[in-house]
Length: 194
Image (cartoon, rainbow, N blue to C red; front, side, top):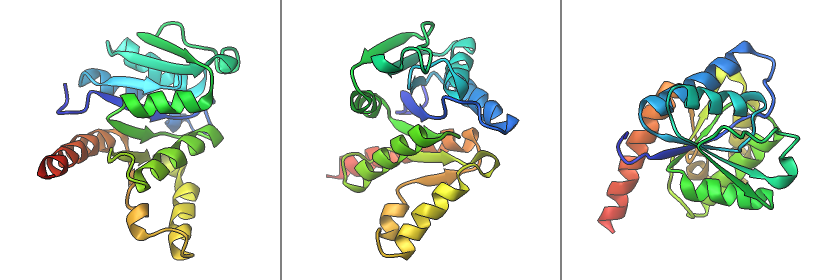
């Protein structure tokens, strides 16, 4: 088990996206989590990058918890092969369980749903609802526009630079994993000081 990181929530697309690198990054995420005995927590679908990261984790011998609202059963093709599958009533319940069960959050390439999850978990950190690491893996520059939007909100006076610093942009999943370990240790030390 990697330090105090027992599980990582991965937010990513239910589609594959246009770059072949996105699939590679999703595969690498699953492999690195499994190799280090860290459980994957994700949206429970078998489509797109969500399916790739789950399948990669399972193939490498890792544990996977999928959380999916019942109304997405067919749209995202609920992944029946995961270690634990939790079917919920709403998107809010899905995100709450992902929040509760993860020690860190990785944002991989994705679309509107990924943006929604990212903004909510970032807002919760800004509001001091958690101090867990949030790492955006900027594979092939997919997140440049999202990062620019966050930076613009600071420049325009709608957010503090300290809030923007609550999400870290990293180039790959290896760095995301290393930062998850170090940030989780720092959080544990900070909590012990109180």
